[in-house]
Length: 432
Image 1 (cartoon, helix red, strand yellow):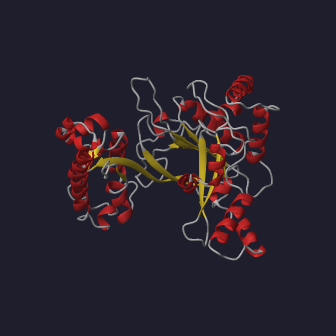
Image 2 (image 1 turned 120 degrees about the vertical axis):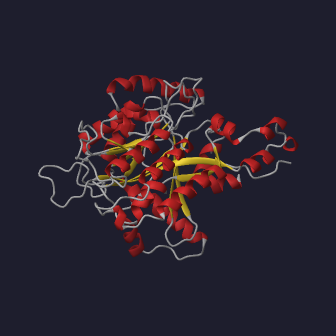
Image 3 (image 1 turned 90 degrees about the vertical axis):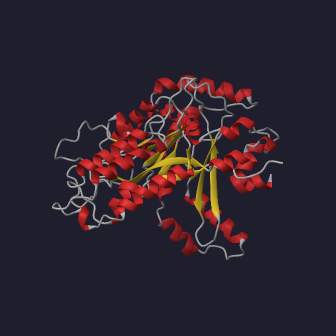
């Protein structure tokens, strides 16, 4: 119980284990972690349970009976700061400190959240009756009643948080974590939110790898400015200045290829303007592009094969045949790569980039040293990623456009050979 409190927070523990003797088992949580300023290692934990389950996915959860509310709030954060300060013996916040916190508009203060299928309550009024009926049935199954109209009530509260009004801190970014096979529904919802009220939708979809079950997830993206556009790149005309010489993935521009693919694991970092996403007419003269790609970081999953084999030895209850598994067989079966193979390839790329000077990257009269060799070597790394096409198309775009859209110095080197995330999956313990 103590360990649970440390991981999930006191509020989660109370909800899961039930204050009235009723178990919160089968609840689906979303949790926000907010660092506490001036208290080392302290983090505010804010969470809620999913309310409306996915009928199409036959989802079985213990639905929340609470009204919808965004995870982040000034009151909740101030309360968490006070609690953290008290725990370390610091003085309570004074009026000036509370005012300072209130005046600092943090990114989370602009955000609201819907968990996966909760979104369908606000896609069309036709959905209301079925969602209401199924919600009541599921609540009864766990021993709870329902009062009022939970669907309409939550839509009203969501509308109040997102609506256009005179608030300087209006919530304008909708975050939607999901496990779904119908990503197009979320893209369309994001487009309508932008056109209705200048909302930005951050759609984070799970990657579903079960071929036998016929599931296909993915499709994650940020749906914002120009998400209904039909404009395409033309020779000599690049639509956007990105760190990858015009290549972009993760920001939706009304093309399925803009989103992450069904199996692609990557972190997309973007710069989002929470106020002027709809630029208006006339457009402010000095307004930067309101959504811009900062980085696309594909994930490389790797293991130390020797340590992995030792962990799964027959002495630890593993299978003796596992000892003979090769790195090639492991990669083919799981998509996971051996550390040495990853390190060797990255070392070759790094060595080549060390020969490239900053002038080479912007001087139209210079040629990169062994440019074809660099591209060919980098392409051999495509198999390390869950979605090889993203890596290949990124390199192809850079190879084609680096003169039209140069990037002086080390940032370009990073754009070619250093933008990925390594995840070490080796199990390094003994089972007794």
